[in-house]
Length: 151
Image (tube, rainbow, N blue to C red; front, side):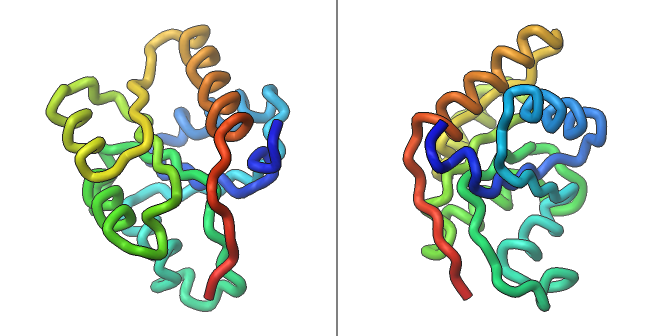
């Protein structure tokens, strides 16, 4: 794996079961990245903008990649995607949507807002393993992404 395999991954996912499975699979794949989680869109925006419960975090490290669920409580993933991709500080962070929605309108909207990838959560565990392996191989292995600390 490239140096990305040690850089922070932010998972924005409200489902405890989905997050546990994702984390377990990545550990089995020997992903060394610290994996951070936000359960709502509001929490994700607080983390990225260092407001609310994250306002005293120092230093703030920009994640190498964000895995984003669309259907979140409160501020949903579509809004999070649009806000982050419109902000000069965050627009270069790859955001891969990982959601149950296969709706063409959601896929089109996400790419129009700057999503770097779109994955529909599979139902079967073997298919999920293959999908997460592909994510790890490309986004944490092959892809060179920007990474920096900022204040």
